[in-house]
Image 1: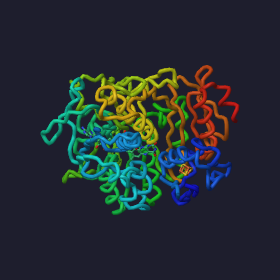
Image 2: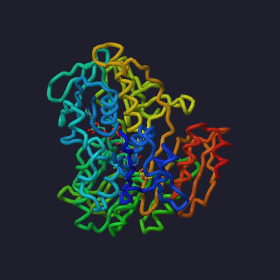
Image 3: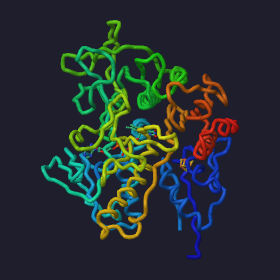
Image 4: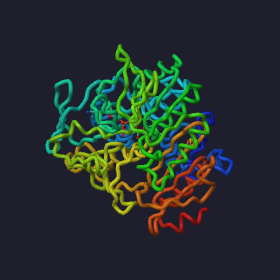
Length: 67
Length: 426
Ligand SMILES: Cc1cc2nc3c(=O)[nH]c(=O)nc-3n(C[C@H](O)[C@H](O)[C@H](O)COP(=O)(O)OP(=O)(O)OC[C@H]3O[C@@H](n4cnc5c(N)ncnc54)[C@H](O)[C@@H]3O)c2cc1C
Ligand code: SF4
């Protein structure tokens, strides 16, 4: 597949508890203002297992992967 | 698979993700797939979410998981040597590998038994009308109905996490709430050094009547058997139309008597004793609220963790562990993945609790002797971080409205519990 994946956050659900940052700090960052920032919206394919882990472990089910 | 809640379904998903396509039977006495529990004291009870929205993560994947899902059926006994389970419908199941994930259930007061104080009874005992425990979607809906009728006062017994969340949500609905705690400080069992006092402050700031060191004798009832109030140790009656009992949970192990498994005594934390890989007996693994295991990350300290994330992580691990057992005894079923050896389950527990607009988060596990060290903010404010020190180790970190810092502490603690390394973050 040449199409990459895209990380989508449902900010209505996200409560910025930073679990995803614990899994992949290169993609997810909760900053001092306590908001979640996505550092790479379309992370490289080799990060897919980590992205799937983040989806699974986000307690709010706020992360989804498109593509 | 015994128990179809978070840990059980995480195990199923990891078994399927490993490529195993053999038959999986899942048993749970719940009438439908159990709900995700955290929203039950928060969004659902606040009336913000319909109950359906609190579906557990696996609910959307049931078809692809291809399970023999037997809901409404409980396991009533186990023979660990034969790996056979007797079920409440009278049938018997024999499995090549078993995952036990029966979780925990809410404790209740030993009402009417005369000896006061929380902690004795069992959630399955019928409670009088107006009294509630909160564990399942059905519990939540029943309580919600009563709250919608705007009772004059809600009394919450127990200032633990469930009690604190229920009190906060009820107060948020505009109800008059009293929260009673037998100990002089909330969360005394979890947080040494009186740190739990911040819960008192948080609730009082938000209008909850918090009463500490209160002894509770019994529930007072009206002539029709419904709740009239709470009988306190000083002889008074605290009037309440609704009483929510949040005095903790006990692991669901009653069905395992004479099973051949080792069950820990309650004073050692209770639960099914597993080895560090979550194996309780050859061919039998356990995970989630019900499992106690020596956690290598804490020098082999026996832990039983009642947290959402632990249920997901331990369940995932247990699924792979079960598959390895399957590989050992029945090579036809597993394929390559099953041959892999599965190591120890090493973890730094993490959980959160939302009360009012505040996020409480905790990483690790502290003991009664650990020394609290405030490293950011102060305990009476609405943002702080406290670390807990045991000699050269940082055993835990607690934060109020400090998710980023708690997570940084966690990442450091996952590398090493060394005190200096964690303290250097602040
Ligand atoms: C109201 C509430 C709010 C919570 N909020 C938070 C939170 O904010 N943050 C957090 O970290 N954690 C929270 N938790 C804790 C978290 O939900 C639990 O740790 C998690 O549900 C544990 O999952 P489990 O699968 O081990 O056990 P459980 O969820 O207890 O599930 C056990 C399952 O086993 C079934 N079972 C029981 N006996 C039998 C039997 N004999 N045979 C077959 N099946 C059986 C039960 O029906 C149940 O479905 C909360 C818990 C509750 C109750
Ligand atoms: S884990 Fe989920 S809720 Fe937490 S910060 Fe990430 S997306 Fe938000």
